[in-house]
Image (cartoon, helix red, strand yellow):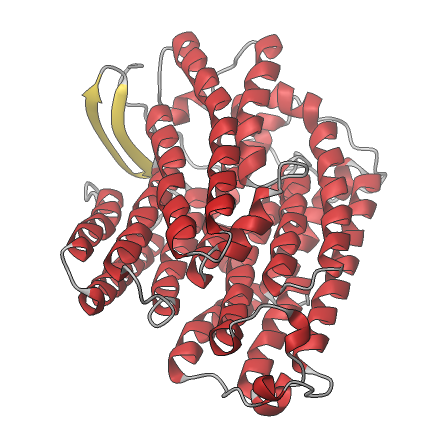
Length: 515
């Protein structure tokens, strides 16, 4: 596939679909959106199949100068490949979940989702600093509209809060980017990832990027926009918000904060660890007392993302690989849990946990699938989240046994609130007649949940298929961080360290000189 602009095509297909939706009726818009997302899924599979794990670090590169230093520069490594795969996998499921739930302004809704897909793929594929920023920020607009127009009763408040939190953090990042371009003389992300910025300036640059990525993750204490956004968003909006949009923060740390500012990352790692430890314990306890199903799952997302940041700032291969696996696993499982909430919300139009109970009697298929995703969220061995959480905790144990101890309590608390939720919804007496009368899953709902169940088990049983494409990139990042990495306090060593260059791709040639 050398020379074929597959990444541009993967962005052009949903863009064309979005425009076509605006000129179609409700039924036509649904089919256009579904076909466009399925075409992108096929292209995503082709991208994965043709990705050369032993080849260059940056593959499928495209470069078209636009003006000045700004260029349409795309390309992916194994890390970006995995996140693009997650995006194109979830999008057709989101369209399917909206098929009957969304009845007003359907063409505009479908167009907003397709535009979101364009921008999410753009974030993970961008190799120009300013192009990344445009994609990263523009992704706010369709999500803001989805919450504000098709959301719940307090949708306006939630959409404004979502927009303002995420936008304010990014203004500092833009200023830092302009300084970096002035200093390094290039906007190319692969070049900037190997550029050695002054360690004294790195701290300020790191903090500017952190302001944006911490809100996007979201990290405690700037997480408060997330529960409101999830509760008010339509089901598909919650799926894509938890599944992909939160992962942009983690991707930002991997692509920018760690490789571009290694000394600052090492210096400020205790800050990240501290915030993450608070998030793991605090948001898990908050989740335990929720009466709204969506709020409970939203707070669990904050706790899971804290495991991601802990692993990333462990500065070793196990931690970084674990963080990526947690992001992928959480994208599948949290999306599936929000779909499970949507299934019963569509029937009873309430998210109050107390209004349900004993659903395993009249909805056995639903109860089985919901149990699988509950167990995956808890980190049961054989499911997607186990591998990521195990690797992340193993990685952070090498760096700090105390942080590992606190982070592990999050898994124990996670089991408490998820099993408590499941017991109240699926077991117990059927005290509510309307809940007892609800029909089991329809064929459409099974078709939406079955691929997520299969992917969750696939990740748990054979994680190597997800780890292999990004292993060389993780090792390259580890080698970049090694000179600055803080010494761990744990006495346990996980085998001898690998030589920095082992198993790494050849370096991709730069686009001539700096632009």
